[in-house]
Image (cartoon, rainbow, N blue to C red; front, side):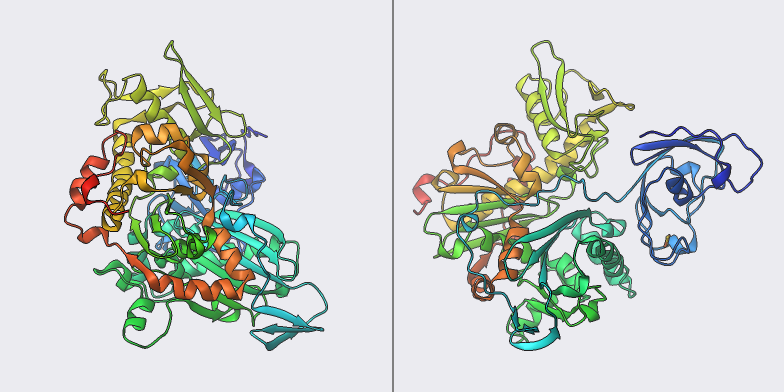
Length: 571
Ligand code: FES
């Protein structure tokens, strides 16, 4: 539905029948807005739901909006917004300040975001997991590790959560049947503290009030309250996430993760003999989560450095502890996780790719949700065939569309392997039928090239350290919501993934949430993971002598071949 409201006396502070001229595009709605109207007021008029717990008092910090155009038409930041970075504002504080202009903004996305919520074709998916949760029932007594924490005759539930830098996926399960009851996904609201892990570490280290954690808990509270069960029937929450996201969630000091040698405080404490594991646990009450206050919140163990609990969860999901074949997992995201090996030997690495492949820092980039161009093909006559999520007008382009677009531009030689447009164009317009032009520039390519370069360097170093070539692999799991929707041929052409046989590549979706579910439902698997992470060799990319060479080469748009000489390879 699109409203076109010319007189907004209901949200105009002047109340004088002022005819406004600022065109406000808010999510997929639009209206004319008058000076003095807050963006929250306009959202209410447009029936857009904005998260809030303080009813526009400037206290809860939940009413975040991202301004994508027209910041100059808005009032100056207020004191309540001093914590916000980049283009984020609090919609209850931010007002229209000009008579003329265009403002585009959106609330943090949720629900309809195209995040993969179910894993596919995983070894663990094919086996019936033996239910062995930490939370059990004895009559009406609810036990956590055998100790009574509540009494109820109703169902008992648990939550698995994949806490990503950009997106958060939450799945509610019945702990007695193992069934998924509901799931939800949101953009990580901590984006106001920066789009990558290092920015968040810096932000959280400076901010003693733990605003990143509190804001995330505020958003999670809304998600949990919308689940179709009594929140007090949720007795355990298992968290997978990279080291930084996990530790911020548990209110741990993340300073050391941002400093060489980039280790979580849990890793440092374990090395000093002060703890036995890098996994963490707290009560729900301590973290202010609205589930049963005596519920346990368990953070899966991290592997080492930035190779976090999400990578650990992926290992559970692909059952690498019992795998005889040689497998690799590549979970492409703001931080790309790489795992390589089998039951005998496992290597892992984390690549600081940044948010470009999730639409961040790209002119017309957006996450994979309704309105995103997800597929691109260029016809013989040069016209573009686009596939838009939801089949409506295009609003932007998401990661899989960007990979397709670059692959097609390469194929017809409109872009070269260095990422330059061959015909001197400043930008390439996509033939989208939406309200606004959607275009692609060389500086976008540069962002994507650097993200790709980091991933390729990680792949080369990991395989070289392990002593095998790409083609020696039996299975290459492409994981993560983004990985699920990639076109494999396009990805190989631009050099995003190794140039190996298609039959070895399996797109598995969100393996991290799958692993978190397994850990929630099985104490045995959880214990298996606790010992497995201690056997993983962490390859530190930043200290590798050839990192920069691999990175530079990986920034080019060519198929990626193994750098390990055959005669040096071991089988
Ligand atoms: S509604 Fe709570 S800070 Fe804006």
